[in-house]
Length: 60
Image (cartoon, rainbow, N blue to C red; front, top):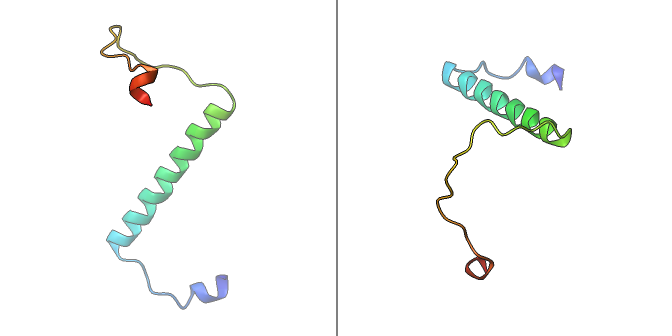
């Protein structure tokens, strides 16, 4: 795999930016899943008033 890296074309600025953003977003997703898996999730904010409550019958 490393041997054929030298034969590939260089990334354009937009390609490099897109690749970086994809890796950043993937990393964030893994961090969120890790926090959830280890039971460390916290509610940062919530509304006090309930806007609407869906009933079971409506959901079916």
